[in-house]
Amino acid sequence: MVPLILRFAQCCRSAGLKVSTSEVLDTVKQLQWIDATDESQFRTVLRANFVKSHREHGRFDRVYDMFFHQSLPPEATNRSSATDNAVKAILEAARKQSSDDEASLIDFLAGDPIAYLESLRDLQDRETAASPAIKSNLGAVAGRLHVMLGINRLRSRITRLLDQPGPAMSPVDRDGVGRRLMSRLDTAYALLTRDPGIDNDGLDERHATPVSNGGLEQRPFSSLSHEEVAQMREVVAKLVRKLRDTVSRRWTGRNRGILDIKTTLRSASRYQGLPVEIHFRKRPPRKTRIVTLCDVSGSVWAAARFMLNMLYSLQDCFSKVRSFVFISSVVEVTDIFNRQDIDAAIDLALNDTDIGRQAQTDYGETFRCFNTDFIHTLNKKTTLIIVGDARSNYMNPRESILEEMRQRCRRLIWLNPEPRAFWGTGDSEMPTYRAHCHELRPCQNLKQLADFVSELVL
Image 1 (cartoon, rainbow, N blue to C red):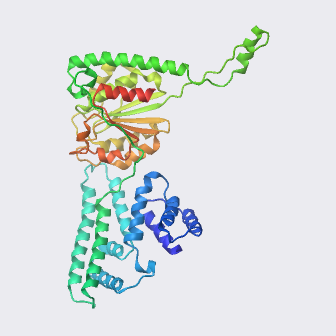
Image 2 (image 1 turned 90 degrees about the vertical axis):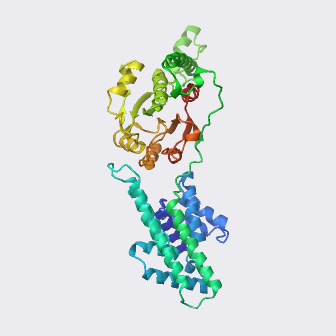
Image 3 (image 1 turned 135 degrees about the vertical axis):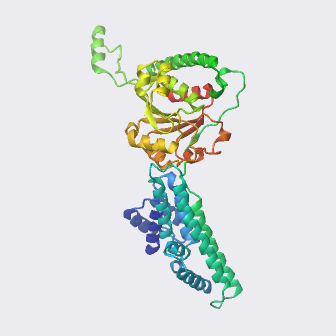
């Protein structure tokens, strides 16, 4: 049992799970107190020790099923049969005809998935650490294509070996060998092509409610005329005043602070020492730090403009607001919005900042630049709000950087001005980024934006 657990732990590490030696020892000790032949108990013990968070459950389940149900070698189960011996013979013959690059695949077919999983992890690491000069996904595709071609070559080679006269095998045994090896090759192919991603069961995903076509607040930002934009500013100003008044009343009536003994005793002197008036210390309101990362390309800027307008009008409701705009590079516009009126600040942000207005939107490059220059702005008190359509022009999405940003902040909220039906179509990377968000919601009109800001403030 101990060698089996050690091999499984090594397999989990190769798949990207962090498993320490102490956790392996705890697992071995705990297995003595359960019925190890009961798979539900056995699996629960392994999951409890090897999984650190609910976001790793899916990856653990995939590794567990692959290791214990699809690629466990015969010696691990004390199983020996004519079919197993035939599988070994076919694989040895295939190994002699294969290159060194295909050795990990043959080990995977023989029941040792560690080398193959490590090669897949190396591919992911190379994709993550890709050179900033290479923005497309062609490098990642080329690396995976090389492994895919190796799988196809090995599949053809095994088919030829099964058709050739070799060790005496009945047709039934030959069919069994073929099904087992092809099934394992299918598993290797699935591990290569189906990115398991990260489980995000706790995602708060909001859906747009049906709206009528009459109100200005329900008109899409991208379809507003100049006159309607001017009218919308008045609506935003009224909404901001209403939110400020509501916040002021809530903070005034919020739970009082601790008893102020000195002030209470001082006022009691006016009532012959009786504490008729009880005084409490004022508790400062707990405010949230806001960091906004807004796409300012095309129609997306219409939503980002109103978002920045409302947040800066409500600055006193937050402890600090920092804003960044981007197309292909990131520029901080916090000082511009602090010094200028909102309309003048918008013009300066578009015209006087080095955001590359003629460049194509590249979210992966944006995340890389933000991670390099501004990652220090994120901490566990920060709510990061990204406003954008996630259309990255088929560039490398660099979702691992977004995951690092999520780990550093309190909440990561993505507002998408596009209709939900368009998410994931064409060059949209929204399905990729979805797994790294705490909250995801549409933001096509002022009503949806106002609902979001109200929830954020109140």
